[in-house]
Image (tube, rainbow, N blue to C red; front, side, top):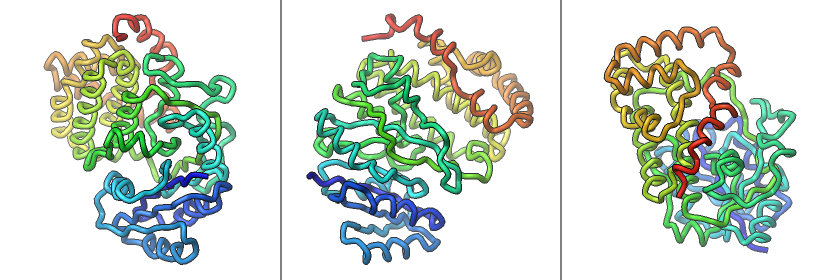
Length: 357
């Protein structure tokens, strides 16, 4: 049985950390290496890591200065010894047979990597009723970057529901981009562009904890938008240069709307900063016309049209009107509003042939 590495990056998450580590230790698949990367935690997380090293010789701990999620994962990528590697965020927890099922599938298919299902959980760890990917709709299949119907929905950005072959990652010489948001999206889309051997399995891999305390999106700062602008340009150029704009149109539809609503909802970005974001991201908004990708709603379309036309003040005015309206919505209503629906994807699909390879 080959060794599988499980990487857990950690920063100030002492409340949930033991559950995450225990879920790795107690896997039914025993030949694992667990790398805990303490990214300069200021709470008791570092001490918890040191306690676990004494309990299980499969655990390694890296203590480093705080540098962010990407630096923590990259530190593990420099030293891990498994034939395969999985990632687990420190406030989530694995299913106890996750490694076994993912290992069996990647071995069976001789895949570069395998994508698994996962399930949301409350902050207290109570699992939701159904997994994220519908078990009836999505059976096991081989993904393709020219499949915009099934593969697009399954190829989510997270690295935490995947198992990667070390040989594949070494061949790509890939690392997580440091200092930028959307690090998972940059990593996973690049992997997808450079592999024709990716599989999906229905096996539920981990539990994604939905933490309380208000919307993270509403606290996105100007630094976040400066970073996401760079990250999205990198992702677009990767798709463009690999001649995969057909698939990118679907990725763009989702990310464009989602990011626009983050800007609209933010309570920490000033009016002047919003103006600057709208100007800096004009290249991104212009893609809605260049790639013929519609916005989720007429309101977002109007904002983008005004911004691209140079009417930043009008675009900002529309943003503020929409922000006020969203204060009366539930979190679920806001989330649904910011995602493209089936009808919108159908409108995008009309031009699939035009943008395919």
